[in-house]
Length: 395
Length: 106
Image (cartoon, rainbow over all chains, first blue to last red; front, side, top):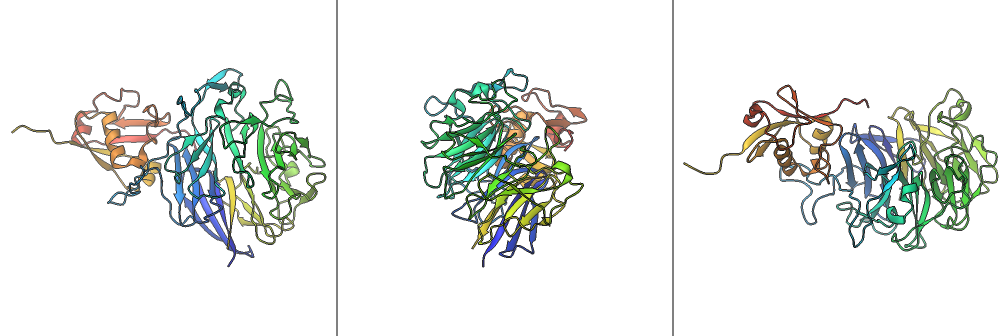
């Protein structure tokens, strides 16, 4: 039987929502890790039972949790190789995972500084994991995008994490500046046709691409224009909010920038604006239909600083022609007095025949459209503020 | 009769988040050999519960995390040297060593 499992990260724990292929009735499990912030959870594309979760707290730091049974039970995998994950008394033994910037002479880069909000330089300090991206081929491999911005990788199911320091050491680090949420690496896209190619995005540095598995990185921000930096066309400094791709065309990228929705048809070498008739080109989330590579979804948000839908109407906008024209989708969504936000990792699609589209809000609602956006309904309405939504299609 | 002194049994009170993480309820009793200090108590705690490593002290620097405080015997010990002796009542196990999450909203 086919079905879906929706992984929801919130300000106060994780929730797992499951349904059959009809996506009409839902089971809600959680909160897992009650009271902790769950910035992101994501399942392995090759083993749906393997899920990674980023659990963090401003008080107590960063934890990585791992499930091998689809989120029913969890473990902290950070033990030494070959040792048990639980003591004889049943206490968890796995350490909270160490994310230590690699400054070694062999594989690392010196720990330099980045730009602070006031333009001064500030030391690089690890704060938390924003995004987890499991490998497309191996459930024990996963990438982690962290704040302050860097990319880490585990090859042993989350026991140990090592930095791919070439990104942080790219040389432009002193020009990277934190967005309102911090200097975070929030987007990781793995190219399904080229295992050496990875795209990442950092707020506020911009987008980068590696073609050698993470050793060296190229800024891919040509065509972006940002009025909030001294040179609006600079190579570095753009506040990229999110990037999406369709797996059948990994060279075609769609970006929601701080302002502007953008498109690249050449792996990020050049971008052009596709904001077209959107009511506002600000927003965080962007995604692509599972079966129609030219069908896109965004949730326009009013800015500066308001960060809620224009006119209090929660509208997903869909483009069926790659961004030339956008259509508001409203059926089942509140069309008055709605002042929630939808964050960058809080939208996802399933791969069922009728593509399901999902998003979560700062008001604790998780919405599902089982028909590509035509009709919407709330799966849940009263969760803590939603940080992230991912979907696993189960067969 | 001479020999190695028996370890002190120190009662540690953890905040909610860390009790959940360590899967414990109530106080945690840890055996501390040698001087009873913040550092030696936390070393013993992390040995007994490795998954607390990094949650009270930073992984790399071993410094107290910014929003964590240490109380005992109605005193705030957060700023004292991690190697300074803790109050005798803590070493005797009659008073707990409290790890507290700073009150900071949320």
